[in-house]
Image (cartoon, rainbow over all chains, first blue to last red; front, side):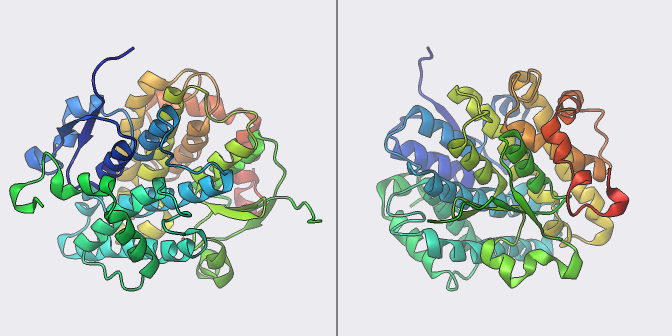
Length: 202
Length: 217
């Protein structure tokens, strides 16, 4: 059996990294951060070492944590509610974020990059706002924090970075507000990471 | 007493996301009805008011089952796995499950969304093919490497899993976009082995209710 804390390869501003940080915080799992700067040195994520060490993606990590450290729950017990959680998580992690991440934006002409990112987020948030009408309670699905909420908050942060007007999304906005006061979402915030640049620190 | 209705799958014959779910339903022996949604005709039937009410993302697939509607192909497959557990589509061991999900996420979240119809339409026409090819090549470069450590007969070990349901449709997309798959021998050989299985054959785009005559097997 292994000794040693889990090691998270993380970029302070990456919404994917933030999702996993929140999961680790909620489950009380102590870990070590190895910062990967997505911009410096042409992008440290492209170094051979990192590629060999990067074993998992995103939601697969969170589902693994859920199966191996089951409390507190990040997925409800009921299969239909679990489906809602996964549906919302996939919508964000598979339907919005990949279309506005750094490597895709770099392929778009610079003058169009902002609009491209905004469009990706707006299409996704239009759909999400509608879906939340039927699933949301205090949080995205019912009244407990789930994997869907771990995806929502970082995506709203991205929306703000790309200057997307969130007035058309009152449900998304109010859920986001409620989540941001929770400790796990605060301690893992991009403004408080080991690799947060001084000028962006809280 | 509610009537037990067959599940309804909203599907497009050529949609790789729809094909993933069709394979899952076939493997689990679930009988269902297909409602074809043509992504091109009438400006794209996925944009109709009716369909938008069903799936606000305006994408296929969507599955009506057990009184609910689910979309996002992997969320659908995980629901089928939890409610109709045999035959398995995810291994029992959490680490192997993580490998299955990682590969599935790589394809479903990392490759396909970057080369689907709605994104390609935003790219200047003369660049569309290269854009799609780049998305697939980047993804397949990573996937070929990952499979070195996970693959047996199939993507993860020797049983068919959700990862395989994602692989085959993505290879079909690669072929459609004329991506040379010679650099990906593991992907290619796994794909070949999967394509002879019945569930992958009966669900193939060339054999769907909405397959155009000229593309039928």
